[in-house]
Length: 99
Image (cartoon, rainbow, N blue to C red; front, top):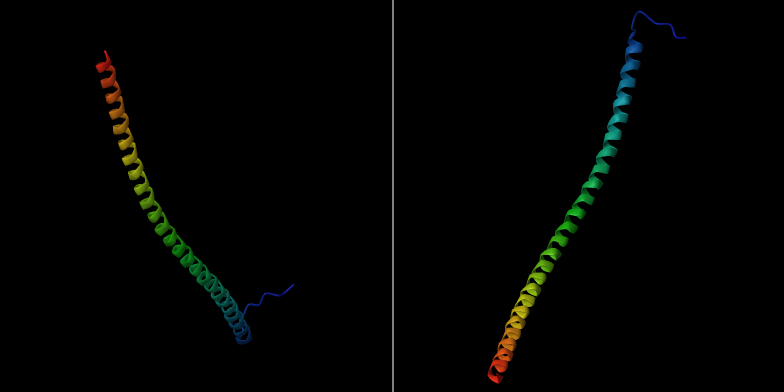
């Protein structure tokens, strides 16, 4: 077991100073690696943002196509309704004139 010393000698203080400096160098190196990983993650987020922008454009295009399709279907249904109504009125008129 190590004996506890009452006094700090210059050599012991220098040794402690060296160990503390070494520890900070290791921590700085680890932070540098973490910074590199975050830089890679930022690049990936930029790619994801770009893909979302592309999808927004595609969805806007699809929404426009759907709106035009529903407008055409609405127009066709109205034309069919008026055609069917005209045929029914003509049929009722033909029946009434037969009586």
